[in-house]
Length: 219
Image 1 (cartoon, rainbow, N blue to C red):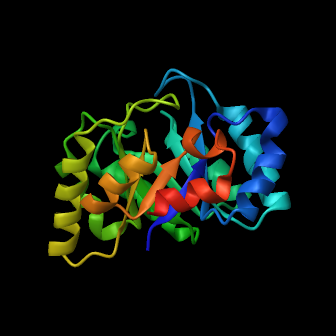
Image 2: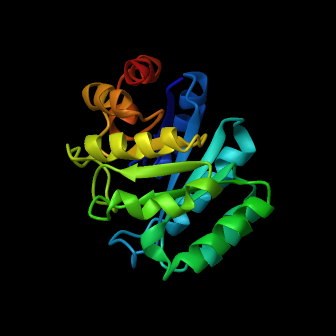
């Protein structure tokens, strides 16, 4: 089953509460929180995303997944564990070595929270393989992280296929999530490649009918 996660990266603050209500009413599977520290990536969304997450916890029941694009991973992980989100994903590029990554995975899981690893377009997909036995999902970036509304990078399809094959051959039960440039057309391409969770921001929140947009993404 294909699931859809709505990114709040380009949601204006004055529209945030109404957008939360409308997305939940439209049957979205997840709210996607993009936390950027202005260091790991250029933009800084720390305060705004924290505020949106607090709104979600107060007024909605939809699951919240947090995507950390930050250098100080541990402090942000602790912050979002305290607020009680459903899953936290961090970048393998943001920690120094395999030991640090495995330690962070274990820490998140000990708090009964799902853990994901994200990988940038220029990082070899095989670098994620050592962590597959320990995580719930891989978030494949199909744009360079840091800004919404970018064009889908076509090489992401092959990366998803390669990852999907490795997961299948090893008998892992792991979600493949894709983030960046997702619309009705690219959704079909990444689903065929093996993805089962699609992150979309602009395509959904700028549409006149959220429910129809979500349906189109699911194919």
